[in-house]
Image (tube, rainbow, N blue to C red; front, top):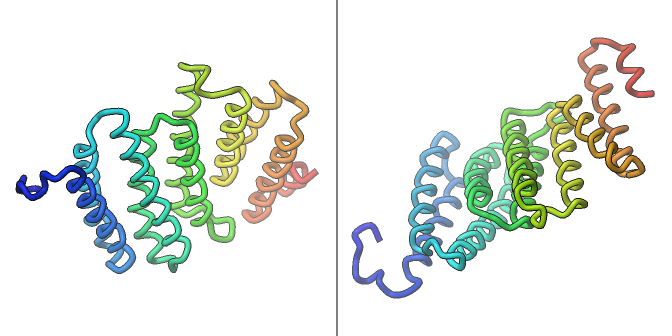
Length: 233
């Protein structure tokens, strides 16, 4: 491909070759050293650039590109879930790269929502005994970026984001804040939702869980026990 060989002129062959190379680089993350993960991810990123160029800039080409990214990302997600912690960190680097690409290029609400939810789930998988690791914090932040992109797109085009879905996105953002132990930010978002629809029982329950988690954190850190008790109540 790099040599522009005539052999690769057959329609679809360049695309399939890029896809095969991409899967090979990403799969190698599970067997290589964690220290080499960044180099492998960089190589995979170069392959993704080539793949993007090969499918073209048309709407059909972009849909094909996103479909390819999502398919490989889902395979990688399964591989991550079945891997030991050390390997999971390396695979996470590749997975993060895929999801960022999908989040940058996708324009469909369902795809963007999947990216945000997947980043949030990745963050959860790196939280151990209520301790938010550096990896977890990073993935929670990436999740928030995607949710914010969805809300921004909804402001520009009301047809893109129905009101009920906008509430759902805000709910996911608030839950992500809570999981990242940003409790005040989570409560602010929950309250914003309740100002519009104050009888939503699931939101009220999420508020209770947020106060409970905040109180538990205060208890673990042995700070203000009176404040912890207040939140529990």
